Amino acid sequence: MANETVRINREIRARELRVLGAAGENLGVLSLENALAAAEAAGLDLIEISPLANPPVAKVMDYGKFEYERSKKEKAVKAKAKVSETKEVQIKVGTGEHDMMLKAKKAAEWLAEGHRVRAELFLKGRYKGMSEEFLKDRLEKFLQRIPYAYRVAEPVTRSPKGFAGVIERDQIAQAKREKEQSTAAPQP
Image (cartoon, rainbow, N blue to C red):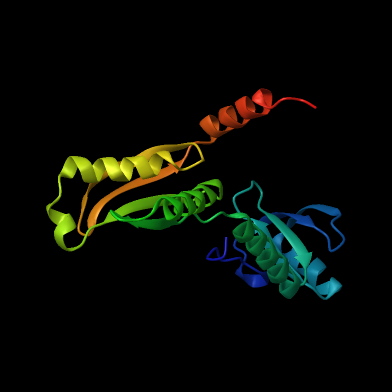
């Protein structure tokens, strides 16, 4: 909507317009000259708000106020749009049990927020020569610790730094899991 040009006053090309007054009242279908005269009499602008309608719809109002309201609507739409990022969690072959659980918990938080998570097993030095099967298994075990339902977006494969896989949330499976947990919990 921001890059859409709005025609006002003499820029309007239609010969006939359905005109709305300054207070929102319907003035009916008027010729362009009569509509411009009505806007001029009110001391306001004639703004074409729906150029594709038949006949096009125009409103008598202040152009500055119109632009202000339009920008407010655009900002509201932008604020509601959720931006999803790919967050990254990195573990090493020697990462301890407690650290793995903390990283798994953080990955679960990111999944709950709607982000994708790229889990990477970082290899350096001698670790690069270890069995691929062992290394993939190590990363798979980490992924299994994540306490949030997810689906694999990109399976575990070799990456420049080691092995990596991408997961994203699975809302249906998570809802099922939460329902099972709530029914399994004893009622006091």
